[in-house]
Image (cartoon, rainbow, N blue to C red; front, top):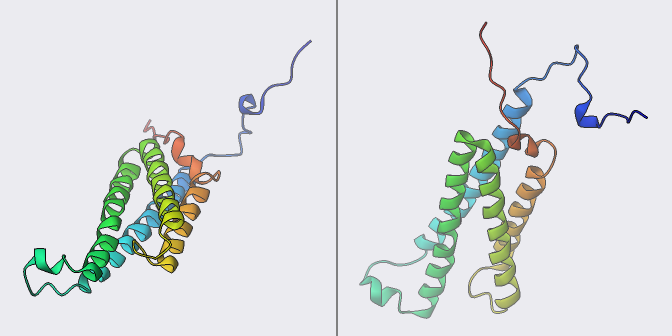
Length: 163
């Protein structure tokens, strides 16, 4: 009794040539999506920090409740922007590691956003429309990275042999 070969064991026909174009496109889309997310987080944080009047002593300025809320809204986003940049560099240098790091960061964003959504009924930590955008961006990046095109980053990059 001979068993049928598993699909992974079936060799490709000779006329099908694998190219690195798919890998490059997948890497480019992943890096672009992460950079857009980093830029969005940084822009929202910078906008929130620009709303604060820093004219006096910083301790006195941050003592007012309204200013403290705006400062908290800005500071919460900066670590995620930094982690996103680290993921971009990791994707460019070591795509497998970058893929895993990006998935962890996106999961962390979703976890924090869900906790804020469920616990922040008075909109102290964030404004709801922005929170929805944070969650939507993380979900879209996770969906892309788990698609067959996004999973190409988990494969080995083919090296060109010069004969």
